[in-house]
Length: 484
Ligand code: UDP
Image (cartoon, rainbow, N blue to C red):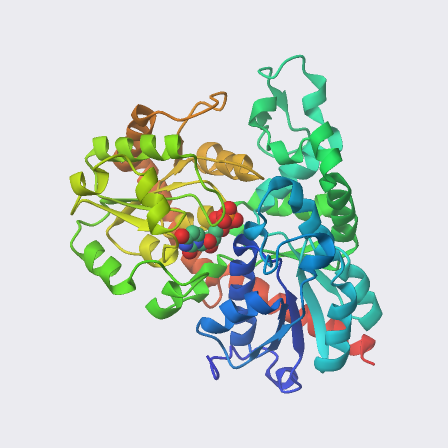
């Protein structure tokens, strides 16, 4: 990657401005931040990535730029009652312990500041996850700006702020009565059941301590210098503008960040080590017809109930379509969960990846034709970037909002269930949604166009490329009068 500099601010870059990156320890947050590290390094900046020892091992195992340095600090598992080695949010063994994990992250302030003081020469700014709200104070200590990274779209950020501030769900008489999200472009209506559970202010949430964290995160977001967004202007122009106006802050959409992984090795090494041989996977895809394969994956964290897995398997089988299906868990567990005789019956037509898939490698292969996704923002944007129609199957967090964006605003996805449906999604619904996604030519056409736009955005002169350049210039300009 050395020598791939883009030319802007080259004189300045000689001074080795050092961007401090502090990703939240969860794959869905870490992966895009690592891409941002790579993008900044491509722009000739030095990058210091701060994380915990086990995460550092994973990061160093991936292909990496010599301009990116990884610094470690211990994660206080024992102090908050977490099991040893629980350094990633997805490793937290139960829901009750999640707030302990967040408490542990709050204890990182002192070691984080010590590391910067001792190890980072010429810090330019701190880009940190919204969960590290206290880094806004660290920025003040070092006289540098803190930039916040949320890891989701402007669309979802706008909806979430509106829901929290106006609580429009409190003005309706039943869960099925629709209400408008006031002030948002596009006149979006929701029902209570369509809101992300996580963000409803309810008793459970208050008790879990999350509500306090969300409140301090919000305050810190507003006090931050600005926001880096993994999105691109052309995807959600009204919501990018609305977000900037609403927050009264600077925001730079610089995505899709996954596109910085240009070759197959980088694509395959993203996140964790894949549980399948990359070449075998590509060889299998090479034997399939263009745009024929359905890719099914529900992100880095969520494990679906075995009853749901059975219905997915049978639905895919009944669709008659070729597929790659990623099932979280080790081989032994997954074998128990799959429908009886399933792999034998679909041999040659279907591939089950048990564990971690090289997702962007699969999505970008010409044989892949559609994506069944849980609508985590990274996956959603990766699907859009690959120009693929999708089936939206939101599970938790802000995923129902991302689903609304792709289904109702961009019109490139089929919603698998009626939003009111609860419980297990039957195999018939799986088969129906997958067939509709693969057969709807108009939707595929729109998805292709968005994929093209995404690629243009990160090319030289594209909106995201320009935003990244403007962001770096802004940081360097800020630095001059504040230089110590
Ligand atoms: N991912 C992957 N292989 C997998 C599962 C997930 O590479 O088997 C990557 C995926 O490409 C995405 C991230 O993990 O970048 C998941 O983030 P997302 O926001 O979609 O969902 P989350 O895991 O946070 O629910």
